[in-house]
Image (cartoon, rainbow, N blue to C red; front, side, top):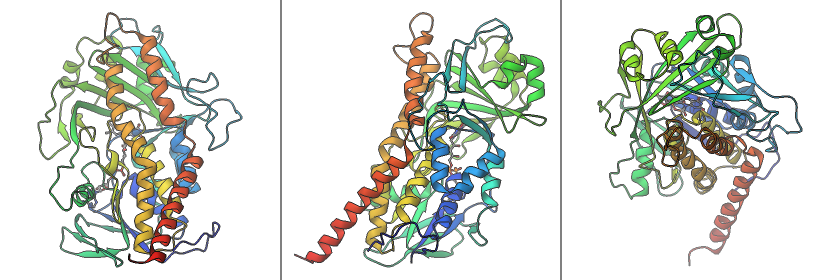
Length: 473
Ligand SMILES: Cc1cc2nc3c(=O)[nH]c(=O)nc-3n(C[C@H](O)[C@H](O)[C@H](O)COP(=O)(O)OP(=O)(O)OC[C@H]3O[C@@H](n4cnc5c(N)ncnc54)[C@H](O)[C@@H]3O)c2cc1C
């Protein structure tokens, strides 16, 4: 059932994977499988690749995962990203020795009191969180996706294919996908990378309940965000060189603003600004859209009570920014990431609010583990199902931790979480809490994670072989 050959570049297993969705997760998976000579096709609902939004921060965990996926993914990130690392240390590319807060690490984010009347040039940070010495970085989403897409082999994508249904045979045999345009396609296994509104997640959740209708949709977290990109030169002029270029988080009651530069420094560099607001309600005004139109006046009104630095930054927004509802799976975590040979990864499996800056990094970790599990399989329904079960066992707890922790972290930074709210904010307690949680995100040993998942898969395969040798009782 398995071939335990060493990494053989020419190895081409006899199965084909369907990938639903061509976002960062789906495209990275296609590249990681292509590098392992595993046949796959992306089915994307849109007419072309498209990344909405602005900047994407990546921690050291994401970089380690990129390397496991495919060196070309890491190279793509390096071409378009702004990466900051500390002085060289003894840390290996996949090691965990380098810790959050280590003095050698570069600044991740400087946290500031957003309500302070002191001008940005004179205002000292309330505290600073350092990244591990191997650093962190940020990319422009669309540019990063473009770089990845460029590497896809010809014919890897079918556009205009919106997944509607999947039928999965009980034993061997291919699965059939039905798309909204009435066409069908077949594959040996399906990986849903279809993001926050994942149809594949609904199919997996229903399958786990024997076909019962289940609500597997993400829920509104109660928070929304305004996002924009501002030319860096403008911000430097207003807030000064140091504050403009240093990643900064402006804290305040029930709201906060995050700014960081994206893309290589120099002319054309942009500042990514995300202004988060707690709406005080768990109901989002639209049934169908995650974004709603807004005006700059809405933003300014929402941040009344913040100091002049935040007001200046928000004044640089475009006249009609979008308001993005932040949805996640805190209230409806999946019981498993797979049902048989249908699997979800990325936001489809663990959509999260963005407060650890790690959603896409965790998507990349998923891909690294999944591709590593598949590279040793020779196929067969049972072994593909075992690989998906091993992925679930390896990843679910960590990813669902991120979803819950991200929501909580926002409440800590917005001085709402019990224990952080009394009197003037306890910045030291906030720092310690954030450092501990960021460390869980970043200080991960990808090689060990992949090794453990492969060992688990091997045990599952051995059990399958033992039971097939015993035959029916
Ligand atoms: C405000 C904000 C800031 C963030 N900041 C960061 C950050 O700094 N760092 C970080 O790591 N992460 C961050 N994230 C999270 C990150 O953006 C996501 O985790 C990541 O983009 C998810 O990628 P994905 O490919 O899984 O899903 P998506 O990007 O949503 O891609 C899903 C794809 O599937 C397609 N699709 C959907 N349904 C179907 C269907 N039925 N059939 C076929 N195709 C379908 C879609 O068209 C889309 O192309 C942030 C998120 C938000 C909202």
